[in-house]
Length: 122
Image 1 (spheres, rainbow, N blue to C red):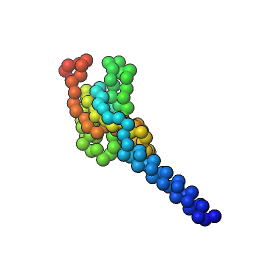
Image 2: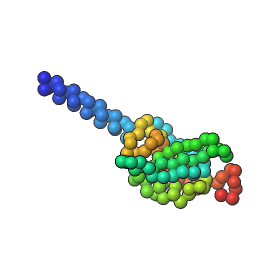
Image 3: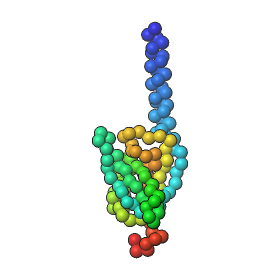
Image 4: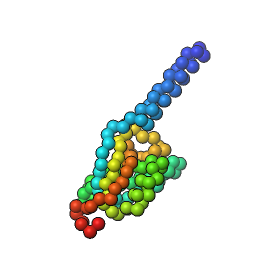
């Protein structure tokens, strides 16, 4: 009876490891989004994560929400510097996320300042 219980627990543990490895290493897509950075903040109760939003339309109708891993300190600094400005975000989309990574499946890996098509003075 103990042997069967060990096999069941070992199988559950192996499935958990496979899921974690898949969520950690597999990416669904990569791409860029451009828009006005309207929000960037560190939030959470137990796990503090960096979350942000860019507006991709002139009226704010298209909002792109994203997360930043806390290991990407250069990205965090660039986003804090450019809040309110037009930016180009390079991101990877993952199949799944964990609570200690962020709220979204989109993780920004690089930030560039961009020229706004609506307001040429920014």
